[in-house]
Amino acid sequence: MISMKTLPKLSLCMIVKNEEDVLARCLKSVKSLVNEIIIVDTGSTDKTLDIAKDFGAIILQYEWTDDFSAARNFSLNHVTGEWILVLDADEILMFDSNEQIARLLKDDDAEGYFIRIVNLLGEPPDFEISDGLAVRLFRNRQEYQFEGVIHEQIKNSISRKRGDQTLKRIPLTIYHDGYLADCLKKKKKLNVT
Image (spheres, rainbow, N blue to C red):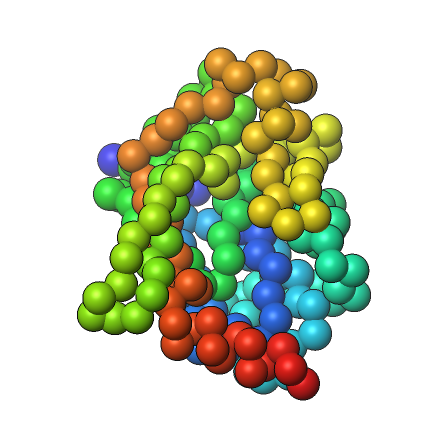
């Protein structure tokens, strides 16, 4: 059995605003894996920050500039771990065991990993599923930066610096329910204020 204490340090980075309904669920899904939680808050007015504090998060305030990459890169500047996991508050990470993650963090040939993201769409119980791959787990290197104002990605940055062969696909899944009808209605209502 591999001890998480002997592994490279793993930091979780998140951007949040008014996520009190989903943040605890997300953080619980990775609490046993991460050594550090970096929360970049862009103006929460609900209990989001209290929940983050309950999980021992480092909370950073950031003035929103309509640029997701800028906010993500701001979070990367505050990470102390050797590896970074990026999640949104309305996501949860599914994995087999801490040992599975430990093997990934010890792979000297990997700079980052593609993780399957399953988006739940529509209205339960008849929701639809859309899925894709994104690099959400990667080494903490100053030269790796997110790109794109929306739908920000770090893959191209890693590929340019280290080559496509350093990015591997792994059998982990992120479930994202922020596109369900009820979630979208609530977010739209919160953004009106």
